[in-house]
Image (tube, rainbow over all chains, first blue to last red):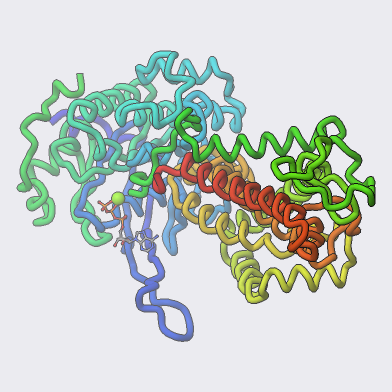
Length: 275
Length: 287
Ligand SMILES: Nc1ncnc2c1ncn2[C@@H]1O[C@H](COP(=O)(O)OP(=O)(O)OP(=O)(O)O)[C@@H](O)[C@H]1O
Ligand SMILES: [Mg+2]
């Protein structure tokens, strides 16, 4: 139970009373605005600095929506989203842009998230250039090396890579900016088992080496158990369980967590994945 | 989730791909003929010689060796007029297609990417525009703004921009859903930069394919306007005016009508086949 012993870290993200809803276009009346469906119902949570927090829950429970609020692709309807002491919930795009360097994201589908018309090195270098943190080919090569891809990949197009390699490029792009936070939304769900293990262990190593704070969205509890320090369980837009992984997994408070834990564990995943 | 539609491949011309090569061959021939018209044309396209009127083409008795495709009612050399006609046809098609394409694509990109108010205004304009029958519209326009090549080009762009606007708007909307657009935002890109350096390269293949198609359309429109005497002065050798003149003499000099008609047909066919071919070359969904 080492987790319980470590002193509480200061929170990098601190979220209070987060509400978010989408317009329900299917039930739009003839006149007036469409009714809204509430997807996040007043979440309060902290993401401690330097730790990997897993976000789990059934499909549609609001995991991605929460993640997209963290990286501010979505704006909350109500509530505070405090990043590093600053409320970023209501900032407009111009005010957000300087902060975005610290708030990176790795996408579920690397084929769609890597521009098919750009070469790998350019995909990595472009954001670096925008934030004046280099952006030469050599800088891109360094980032590629960190994710274990040889130089020869720099001039390839995304479709010339395997799924696992594409996801490494996605990771390289995110870490090249030396951010403080990375959102990883189902980043291995499209990969075969061996690529999954490689990509996850790469993420873990990089996160620990760089002292990154990571929000790791997954519906796979066996992965969460091995990768994450903390976990948050979402159900219908509400947090039903949270805390250090071991605590939550050994003493689940909610039936939802118990049900998720009861779902077939994947015996092939053990700590050797992350060595 | 949308990625299944996504496996772009670099443009590669296979030797066996006749659907691309044949049109390209014909268009290359046209370009060479147009650029070097003074060298290739055996005669002055305007020179009349009433002693040599209505000479038949080379494969018919009574032809003159110097006039391979015969002469018209004023004794002008048909082949030379066709070669000079290619100049005008290509000039009009290139300039008209590019003006149309740039104007229409810009509006399509804006409507598809910025959505909202922009999209409502542009889409409504497209709908209104498309309610007019295009040829009638062209004839009316040129009749109002005056004849001449500039007017013809202007008329084509003014009528046909909707084709680009519609297709490019739809494609842009699809691309705007892709994660790479969110990625760019995460990576600090501004809206405009995202549109120009992320989305535009992905809709460019469609723009190119539409340009080819539009060139074919421009050739037809120019011919139609020449035919009804609304293009440049009828002395100038355009395929349309040749067809128009040849129509009057079809019973005694059918070649004056037939050869430019074939050239027109091949050119339009080539451009549209090329457009389709390019589209498929770029678009794995249609493959
Ligand atoms: N842009 C949107 N417009 C309307 N409704 C949306 C939108 N995005 C998400 N939703 C709805 O919000 C709910 C939560 O979606 P979200 O993507 O956050 O779920 P999730 O937990 O990530 O699920 P999954 O595991 O399937 O990815 C769903 O019911 C979804 O239909
Ligand atoms: Mg999701």
